[in-house]
Amino acid sequence: MKKIILIAKKEFLDMFRDKRTLIRMILIPLLVFPLIIYLMTTVQESQSEKEAGKELTIGYVLNEQSNDMIARMDTTKNFNFVEYQDTVALSADVKNHTINLGIWFAPDFDQQYAAGEQATYGVHFRRANDEEYDRFKNLLAQQKEHLLQERLAQNELPADYTEPLNRIATNKSTPQEVIGKYAGGFLPYIFMSFCFMGSMLPAIDLFAGEKERGTIETLLVTPVSRVHILVGKMIVVTAFGLLSATIALVGLIGSVYLMGDGGQLSEAIAGIVTPQLVITLYLLLIPVAIFFAGIMIPVSVYARSFKEAQSILTPLNMAVIIPAILGFLPGLELNYTTAWIPIVNVVMSSKAIIAGNAEIGPLIITFASLILLSALAVFISFKQFGKESNVLR
Figure 1 (tube, rainbow, N blue to C red):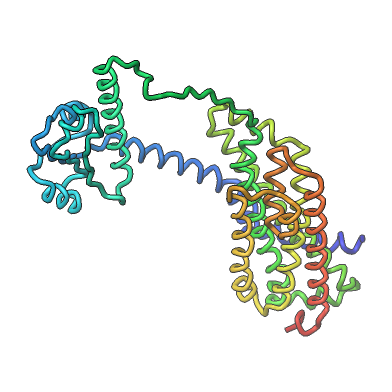
Figure 2 (cartoon, rainbow, N blue to C red):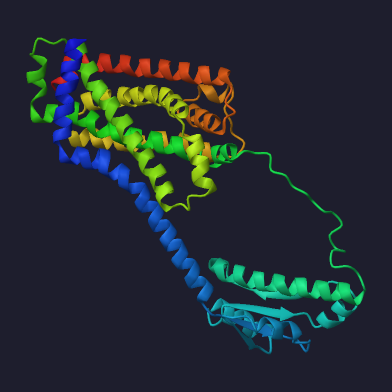
């Protein structure tokens, strides 16, 4: 054990001397989420203000009908209405971006409305400009409500006549359950993505990198068994994966606190991110990190150079991301089936733990399957590292 700790200490010192490691493993995960959230909120607010202040030109064809509806809409700020004589020209100008949208009224629109029937009108729009269409739909919804209330008043009916049911909805979900459903799939995705990326650079550097630099032979001739060397290096790879995932989570939660309003969301997160939750998540993540190390090390041992190992391992990131994305799918939950699926079981378990409705049976199966998977990965690493042709190629 003493020799393993000695090897691990030596590799930790070497890795922390590398500025690239410090930037990639610590600085980037710590800053990436505050930066992403800040940019997203800033751009979204700026774009929303820009769209709200943009003047829309709406063409209309009355077909000899009343212009009362157009007159009411024309008083709305940032809407400019232009009359057309036929729908052909109206449709062409919308298609050619001459105007933003178009509306036309059926030749019997007024007659239909007066008879208490549905009055027909049409809208020309471009699906590629959904923001403009949504603004106009809101304006049309206001007119629909106005005409509805007018028709009810004409028939001496109460304003709520068209609402035969009065719904009283009571939300019985706790904030923890809501966050568990929507954010529970995102957190393990972050954990595993950064854990994989955090493990990759040390795994490549400690094996393929040392072969390329010619230092692996020096280490192998020391009075330390090859098993001790491998375990020491694997500890470093696993630890860097966990470190990267931890810092990414700290950056994410910190950005929510710093950029939030300090209201219900911050309180809910503070109530969810408890020491018990963190410990449980790490019990799941540690065997995953060992598994990542166990699949990266054989590749790094086999590769002739740093670049070759990187080119092989980088596409494997998709094998982690795709199953992790399943955490966002509705209806998929932790059960006795999903508990056996690698990566997916971690996502489902994390969601259930955060929501506070995890069942002990599937959790035990998830943990046991991860232990078996990590043990298999470690065994493969031992077999690969034990081949002289791989280590000294």
